[in-house]
Length: 73
Image (tube, rainbow, N blue to C red; front, side, top):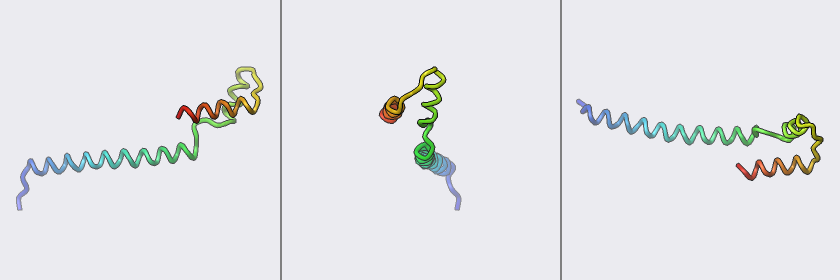
């Protein structure tokens, strides 16, 4: 039972391509799940950013910034 070299190379290439595709979608799923659990910015961070600029933010301003960030995703 002797396998031909070109067939072995073809199988290896196909396995690598399928592995990359599956790995891409699995990584994408886990990253999306992680970002939903831990968003990159929250209301506390926005409030701190306004305070660093020397402004006391109103709740409406914070909600507006959060909504604009959610719409840009």
